[in-house]
Image (cartoon, rainbow, N blue to C red; front, side, top):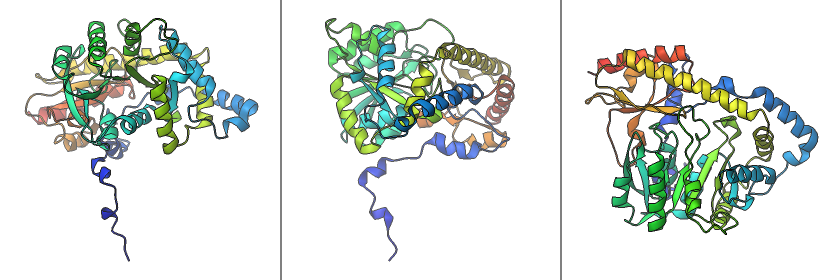
Length: 405
């Protein structure tokens, strides 16, 4: 008898949706399409020679261990390195505050597993990262949202909703995905103070923090939160769960991320990870440690910053040269993305087939709004294409925009 699978799926699968970005990549795989859609780092900057050398060293010196099962918490030297780097900014972090994850996306899923009951209210920026919504919709999350401007989350709007039974806040303070904006220092301090006052945890997602190519470094939320704590604490017991990744400075194919949190939260996440994948790849963790502890990395990150600034500038100049009146955009100080707003009446989802005709692609902005939002927005990636390609792609994009006016 033929199985009727539809009646066998768990109820929670009704909350699963395909990523607009992943579906988009199927279309943009055509070689003649210039894609500003994916969140891809520049592949030509991947440290292939250093990876080759690191692999040889690992297999020669620790091959059996690197290819064996390991502990769920992660490779101890890698956790120690992450804790050490955090301590340089004054945060009282020990390896017991660190869990290695299979990309920072896995952290988001684990947060859903251990915190979200159906109907729980999560506060996000608006727009926000699509991957977080995908992870938490499965667990039945509902959302309160706070709008962004050029200085990040509007904190005056946050004060109106933070005391409305929020389970936690989700914030991308550095070079926001998708908007490209950065939360100002004044707003960071106020955000941390409000979270502490109302007892609402913050999830700080910071995959792009090391990719600043303009302006001054700003302290992380976990750093500012730690300043509020008892100075006698010997390890971090604060109000912020911080997650980051090596995907943007080494290579996304490694799928190595991490989370810093109070020890009691780490213990719950370890249980979630044991049920998900037992552990992240031992070999990839050895590899990440060898690469991240190398003296060459500082210069490598400096090169990434230089290249990405050139590509951002190329995109901004192309907007000035080609985009019609009424089009606006953000000016990111780092990261991979910027946010384009078209004139009223343009619907970027409906226009996507026109863009494909023009041989250019983007991500329609509607996907990034938890509760619905403007239809005339889009996210553009500037890191993956060289300046010449960016200019050609923006000119094609401008033709699409003019066709809708």
